[in-house]
Length: 332
Image (cartoon, rainbow, N blue to C red; front, side, top):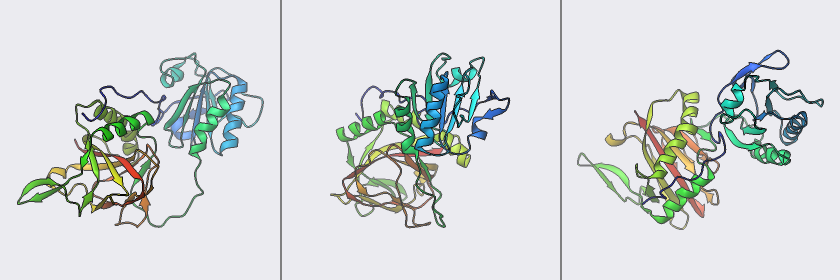
């Protein structure tokens, strides 16, 4: 067995998924479209708030960070204070609220999404509105911009695996794992084996009938695939394999520079994703030596998505253990 028999609980509404696009006339007679007009910064969608709630949301957002798009749904009036929200959409028929809030038009609720318009939190509006908004927005603040002249064609995506699913994957790994193997061709045939000069790590292969396999596949379909299509026009991929792997400092674990599609049985691999399951370790990460010596590391629960044709190396962890979920997507 590689995991529990039941899937972990669902994350908040739209967590890790891009909000659906929507458009409607504003109370001022203009037209607002999410994908067109929310051009910079996170998005807060408020359903049926009072004017005071709108003012609280706008004020809280402006104190935490610049360029937050506060969008209001419902036949409510604008607060008397400045600044105003990005848009107030009457949504007289309730179409937008039903689409965004699980069929409900009567809720006083909020959805918070990052600058990529992917959900990070959803909750009923209460007296703790400032605290909830600040807690959701604060991790979204970015470091000052830097000019870059060398980088690898890698996509860094947060919020691919939610905390409950991460915990279930780690529990399954600790219940059963084995020494990682590599695939090579010997005398014209596939030969898998432990080759410590090429790779040293512990692995758990998720079986297709396992509920954890299904949970990971659903997470990739809802949170990863729309981003691959938006950025690279990649679609029509199938899940080829899921692994949980560990790189431990005491063992000196590593994986030398390699590509993921150079053998006959891996030639149809298209996209690899390395998803961080913990962040309580030092060192480690991926290097793409064809492009730079930079070490790449996604935030916990997030991942690095890249072409299986790219040379990459998993460097040793300096302290602790790095746990990753490895996803391979192949041509359909």
